[in-house]
Figure 1 (tube, rainbow, N blue to C red):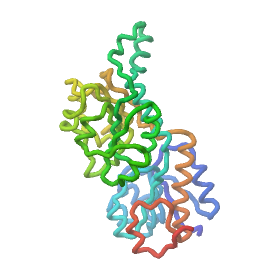
Figure 2: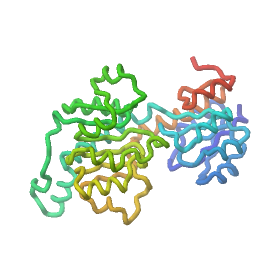
Figure 3: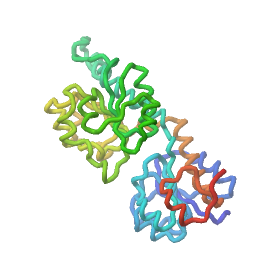
Figure 4: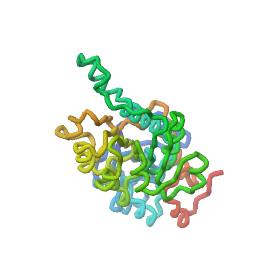
Amino acid sequence: MSQFKVYVTDYNYSTFVPEKEVLDELGIELTLKQCQTEDEIIEQCHDADALLNQYGPISRKVIESLDQLKVVARYGIGFNTVDIDAATENGVIVTNVTDYCLDEVSDHTMALLLSGTRKVTLMNNEVKSGNWDFKVAKPVYRMRGSVLGLLGFGNIAQTVAKKAQAFGVEVYAYDPFIPQEVADSLGVKLVDLDELYKQSDYVSVHLPLNEQTEKLVSHDAFKQMKSHTYIINTSRGGVIDEVALIEALESGEIAGAGLDVLETEPIQEDHPFLSMDQVLLNPHAAFYSEEAEAELKRKAAQNVADVSKGKFPTYVVNKNVKESLDLQEKK
């Protein structure tokens, strides 16, 4: 068991206590690396049985170069850093943590929605600059009776729906992979993209970034939205076409945006968003709480531990890989 080699490819964490608590029970040593490129991962993790991965690229080249690789465990829900097809073809399990930070991201979504709609941040800045006048926030519209459109209706979006409904907001969702009965059970109306754009007073993005979703929200989408629509993104920056968003904001096609994620992070010093009062910006922080981070790290490590014990982990992304592996299902 002690020969099972686990590398962290890259990280911005200050502690690895949760991972070590899981792996120490099996006598597995955790080796920390800071690899930014494919070649660095191949060179520094060449004998890895398992990779714990944050942002480093786990490409086909990497997967086919690591002969002993059995599992890539993502720190998070998304898995766009990993070539899933290459992993499956090479018998490598890819894992994530699908129930990670549900409350954190849904709370953050609601915080951006509330701050943008009630213009809390704008008025705070005005007061601190010496202007005691609520009229700087005009117009502000009542939330009760409005429509929130959710792009994607996975676990986080479903949690957002429940929280928004508590404010009297009607919820629409677009997600071709979600059964009608799931939406019905939550009192959410499943609609197509065009209807979601046209009917929503707020649009919140909850989609993974892939070939189908990259720049999905672009010029045509903004043209269909109401002039008072407020858009929120706590998923992946690349889902929104930023050039189109800037144009929509400048022309008044939509009213504002609350963005926790951007196409390029960190934000560039000359980015137009920085001078737009109608745009709220956060530094990709929606996922964060002390509790969520510890839970993520523990569950990601458990995915690795399960494979080391000859079992399929709880959270498998590429389920087709099971056909080529002789591992046991967890009981």
